[in-house]
Length: 351
Image (tube, rainbow, N blue to C red; front, side):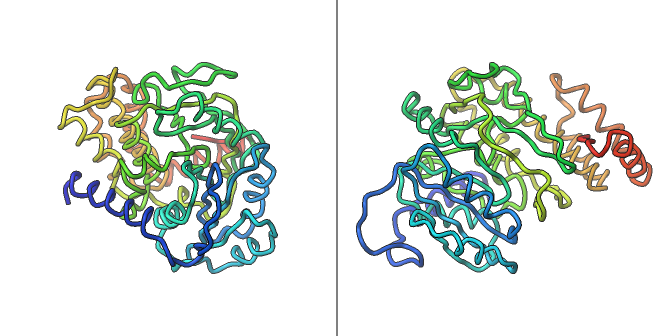
């Protein structure tokens, strides 16, 4: 399927799910006033973490929201943990297991607000997250997404803040001047972003066919059509120490975001101020990132496939060489080296 047909189908799906949900499970028949923001949490076997995520929403300083938890066929007690929280703003919707993109899309379709904020079941917000998001929307109404900085909690408890090249330190907030040039560290994260409903009508919903990187593929589609507003204040906590994380599983060769970027390069239709080289190098960076994931997953041949696709890089040449050398080192030796590094660093190895 070509990119054009794929994204056209995605847009049609968005229209159907956003506009034709009358009578669906979990949708109230009575007409009530819509909240200012809808919060969507996909849930699959995250019983140890879901209550923490919900509490972080319910303790927001901005109060005019609804919270939709989509249970994607969990086999643990996560749904029961949601039911135990008695707050009229919390609604549980259940479906057969169809994947995280399908769960997010279901939640977006069930939502009533013009702005949809996303949060994963094992992450959390700080209390001013929604207040900041609503302020960004007021200040920059034409943006396609509103995002905030995050802290990362590693296994072992180490906490750190990713830096985004080209984005000023806090307390800055504004429009990212060139998303594709300054997005090396992914300023938009799936648990720290809100998207206007109109944007889903334009770019489509999350790609349900993708097994990995479906979130970054979405930000790529949005950034090709809209500016993105950002606050450098840390208001999200991303828990890499959580259980049952999809990112901990082996990485396949498929990479839907690079397909979107390749399509943009072929079309030649780029956002204002964005050069072809910005898109090309962003695409190279994504391949290099996937190569690193493949090396860690013990898939060196797949890593080199990604690196060959990024061989033209100039901005990221040093990183390209690093992962190419790593892909040539036997997996058993790498495993031994990582164990030794974790022992030396006390478990805080992020390589």
